[in-house]
Image 1 (cartoon, chains in turn orange, purple):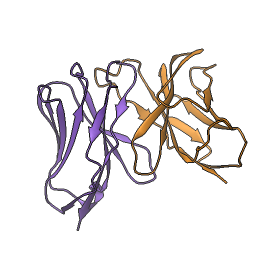
Image 2 (cartoon, each protein chain N blue to C red):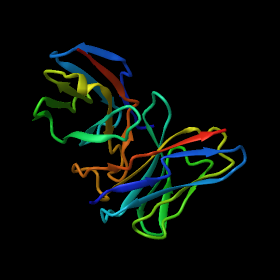
Image 3 (cartoon, one colour):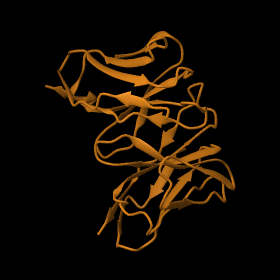
Length: 115
Length: 111
């Protein structure tokens, strides 16, 4: 089955720790995205990547880092510089051009909680 | 800053009624719009895409786009309790390579 997987489903972080969220897709999509969702809020873009070895900051990149060494993988690191990381994190992928209805597919999400 | 705005609700309708969800956008050049449904604790799933002015129907769902008013809506006919979810409007504002999402409207369909 084609799709997007994220792990872990739940993650607990202590103050001052860096943690990495995994995202893998087998849809052969060039573009991948990371979003953050807070309770009762929409999705805010953290980082996105249109091609391997290239990525761009979204609206709320501070305190986060990413890499795109393989087409299938786009891990997100939440660093200790992110002061309020407790949120639901969603990874997505798509064909590059979204203007003609190309769907952005989402993974099941990772719920991160700071202890 | 380019934006997509939605009434966050919550919106409650009785079972069998028509639910109307609305979205406005700031980029007059936007051509296409997506409606996603998100159940509590789950990831969003695409339910409708609309590109041209007018209406697009898919089963019980109808999307309406009015580019002159910069307004897009989603109608759900014969609403069912299983339609209870948050509905997110999204558009590739200013770029065809990323989506801007509204804050979502929480819909509750009462049995």
